[in-house]
Image (cartoon, rainbow, N blue to C red; front, side, top):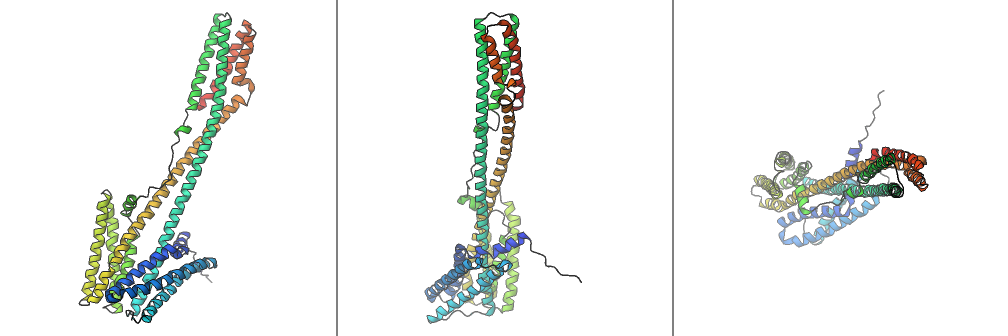
Length: 467
């Protein structure tokens, strides 16, 4: 018998679900913004229908939504403590639904307590309102999770960059200190050898062969000094290491600029918003089935309009100034909302009450569309900053590898000159020459100079790998 096995969700899909319905859904800032958007929508409807009672509606909304936010925040603290596993996202959605049902019930109870009658809503209107509210809460939670994830990764990138910079500085200082010590020692031995030769020349008579040997030795010493100088200037030198700033340049102008770039998520969000808005408003003067059908059709139309804008307009205007790009986007949004109201007016006919409610409600999508673009710009900027930090970290790692190779190469040379075979060191060369000249024995000096020259030639042969 063939056994059916469930295919586990991919890590990327699981992470997306956790972001949409996860702990960030109960972030206090996300809850407050979600409650504000929901309250503005309901308040505009009540303002259009019962403008004389707007203060009472506002008070009832404030009380009920404060209780909703407080209850969701408390539940959000308790839920992560329970071992729910894969059931956590589903439970988050259920909690948001139940708490908002309770919030709507409290709002209407408060109005009735004040001898006011809530606006009558059909089952479809209540269902769409509840779905829209859940979408808003989950949406703001997802945005909060996305921003938090990007900012956290940016901070990790900054810390990594700071750590690598410190390690680079420490390694550079280690190389510089080793160079300073070794170059100083070699220079001292060169000065000692030259001084010994000068004293010998001033106090002794010499033949032509010794002079030739001395001249050749001086030429070798000059070459050693030249190569030592090249070593001290070898890249990457400590002075030449560029200072890399890890601060973000997220100014208002850069956020606005990023907001006008291509955003593949925005058409989908706008189409969902349009479905809830159209279906809710059309249900005031159409049957529920027709309201749902035309809401779906107009939602698809909204997706097509903004998908075309993102894929055909945005890509053509990227070279234009930011102000022009912003005006183009705002013109499309305003034209779209005007089209929205025309469609609603066509279906509404003489039902001016519903039309005025929709007109008042049109401010919400305007804020939502612009807010979505700005949030998309912030996410884009944080991603670009993260990628910039990653690129700089990769450059630092490459520089670190170069520095480590330099340190390894130079360490081998310094050890061969000062720690290895002492018979081949610069110190031995200067000591041999000094001891020979102190005897003032011409033959001994003549025999010592070729040996000293050979030692310095071996030093010279060791240095070219670093030059």
